[in-house]
Image (cartoon, rainbow, N blue to C red; front, side, top):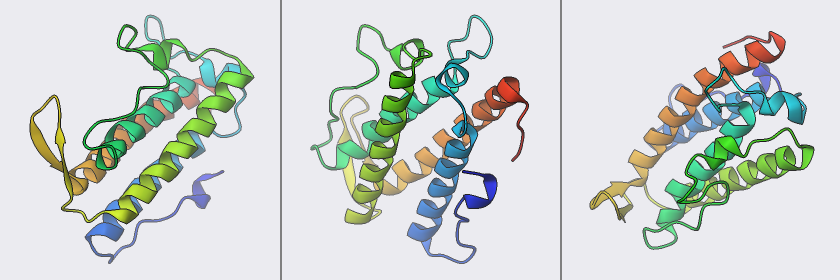
Length: 172
C-alpha cells in the first residue's frame, strides 16, 4: 500500500459518510505506515524504556476496534482481550516480538477487527447507544466513530516517527 491508495473522505458527504470516510482514511494511513516491513522491523521499539513498536500498535488497534464496536453487539460488553490480560494490560506492546507468526497474527487480527467494526457501523444508526460499564454512561456510535478517528490520528503520529526511525520513510 502507498499513500495514493488511501480512500479520501468525501468533501460533501453526510455525517455518516464523513465519519466513516475519515476513519477509513486514518485506518489506511496506519496500514500504509506498517506496509512493506518484516517482523523484525515491525517489532523494533521506539526508544527505551518505551515498548512502543508498529507491531505493538497493530495489536493495540485491533483491541481498540474490538473494545468499542463489540459493545454494540454484545450488550455493552466486549469479548475477552486477545493481545493483553488484566494482569498484563500492556502485553499488546510487550508481546510484540520479532516473529513472523506474531506479525502475521497481528495483521490478520487487525484486519478482521476493522471488518467487524465496519459491519457494526453499517448495521446501527449513529444515535444507537450502549451503556459503558465502567463509566456508567450511554455512548453513541457517533461518539465511538469520532473517538476512533482521534485514536488512529494519534497513533498515526507515533507510526510516522517509528517508520522514519526504521527506514527513513516519511510522508503525511
